[in-house]
Amino acid sequence: MDIAVIGSNNVDLISYITRMPEEGETIEAPDFQLGCGGKGANQAVAASRLGSEVLMVTRVGNDLFADNTIANFKANGIDDKYILKTEATSGVAPIFVDQQSRNSIIIVKGANALLTPEDLQNAREDIAACQLIVLQLEINLETVYAAIELGAELGIPVLLNPAPAAPELSLEKIKNVDFIVPNETELSLISGMPVDTLDDISNAAAVLINAGIKNVIVTLGARGVLWVSEAGEQVIEANAVHAVDTTGAGDAFIGCFTHFWVRNRDIAESLRLANYYAGDSVTRQGTQKSYATGEEFRQRFPEIF
Image 1 (tube, rainbow, N blue to C red):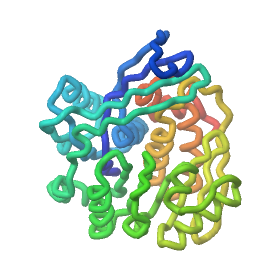
Image 2: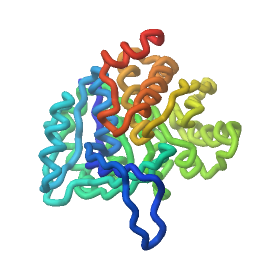
Image 3: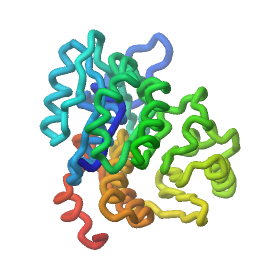
């Protein structure tokens, strides 16, 4: 097994809108789509579509959404042994995408909030067979911290995507991760530093490096990513695209990065490919359905391989 993704799944309820309504106002949206999402599930699906063997550890509810979510994991080749049914509602994410491709998202954790450290111990043997653990913050922090400790015990590298931003996230408890992948807002929250300029971002990332995190990968949207480690820093530029829907682009980036890093252990090269993959995903509507398979990715960008 290549990657253990310990995290969330949601049902995405995507409304494509001309503008956000004012308070008390009802407006008509020209389009709507329902899809499978959640940061953990998105990252797992992206990696799996590219060819990784992925173990997903998550909880679904006992409602109409649960069976569809499980079927989606199976259809995308993801091991469903630890996709656990729960007496709760499934997680949902109402998403609003405007005509400038900007998105606003509401997360309802539902069953995701019930994933526990005990669930991780029950999956310990299978997690131990993986080469990388991938985490996000749409599950309880105590479970995130337990997963980081488990990675240390098992000698497995851990990647943390500290999203959605959590003011209560403890730098002390995440300092042993091998990779942290925040956006600028999340970096500022964790470091307590401003991120107004690239120098500010570099200084904020240095706070995390000095705390013990091995690699800080700051996603900068259309500008690409800044990778900082004890060895130095490097900006890997994004490829220019015409964005249609940016929902799930960060998850596409992480899923692609993890897929290639497990194979080549080359961080810069994996980041370069992940930039292309994430950029490609925003040229189509939807979240997981916008993620290319490995074959599609190579056909679209033969020049980068």
